[in-house]
Length: 74
Image (cartoon, rainbow, N blue to C red; front, side, top):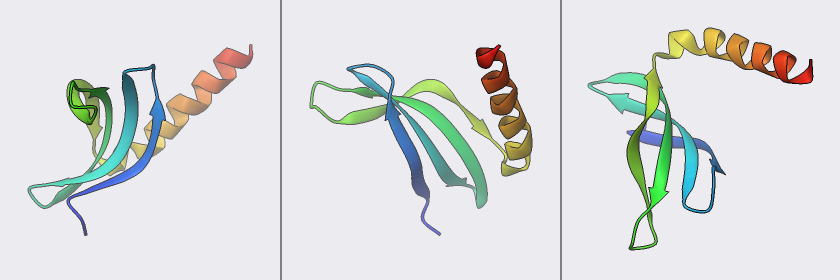
């Protein structure tokens, strides 16, 4: 398995994007949701703004997104 595998990316604004990746660190797989910023070189670089989760927490994350969708529809 590759060390870092980008799953999805979407723009946050003109200079930032949010990337969701599967990363491997010390032999363990993690979900990483992180803001990347566009540097002076025109390339995107990872920021310190993000969260790294164990894949075991994916059901909780899905539940949180579902509740967020419901709250926005109310």
